[in-house]
Length: 409
Ligand SMILES: [Zn+2]
Image (cartoon, rainbow, N blue to C red; front, side, top):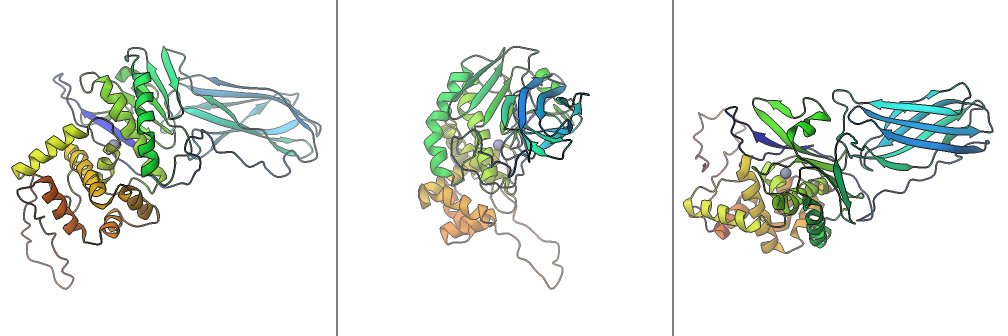
């Protein structure tokens, strides 16, 4: 999960700061643009009976949940057991609900109701099917069907291309749709070139016009506590990013050209080895896929380098905004120095189990500290030497260590 967080001063001023929290396992899929992974047919599906589906419906009751109904018959007698099964993306786990069955043994209803810790945003995709058993013990799995968790309580617009499905609430400027689709199309070759493993599904972007709508689908989610308000989240479980549009924080052009692409890059990270680990590595990497932010970031980071305030990437490296900015420049440097395919190769090593630093060192054949010195030199840092990490002293407790202070701002 990813959270973009905004700190509120309670005195009424909105301020700033995009932070992101992450952690994802990996998963293999095929077909860069495929919306769904074909499912193998269950063997001996239906047993010795003949099954017939007469009617199948999915109804969204957003924000409370959704309902599946099925009318089906079997030559093996009444249906005695039925469950609806669904998932929101091919890489997410399945959920199931046991259905109630009417006396005729042909009409089934299964209901999902959201609960704390079990909620998804509106417009999440729903891939669903049924598992049925008749009186004779035959078991039948119905074909997959697709729908979405529609929010019919307010006005939304939807656009879909080969790269993405975008939903935006009334109040968000309509140009978000075509702009996002154009940005994704323009970056498609960049995504394809830089990731060995495709997503295996079409990502979704859900853009909210206000915090109330965002907070509604999962009460309490909008507030983390301590005055921190979460304004967005990206999840492999939904295969989507959900973001609140706030023109004070970010113009709509940046949402389309940068934020959505950044969040989609997090989905790719998930599919290529995961997003745990160093914040500057993960956030800088997602920023690397933004379309228009690069020149602004480069200017900022080079200014820090010239002022001698460039934070070090050793240990955990910087947090906050600096993690995004310096991390981004690191990926620019890496691909300029070790070739356009360096990104892809680094992530292939990560996917095969190497740590982030080890993957980088495998590409460069030098230690990470030497890499960082070269990076800082490339940026024009007045102090290219990296503060040396404290050596490990296994035999005795060191005296109070004096650590060369990390340059900070
Ligand atoms: Zn991020």
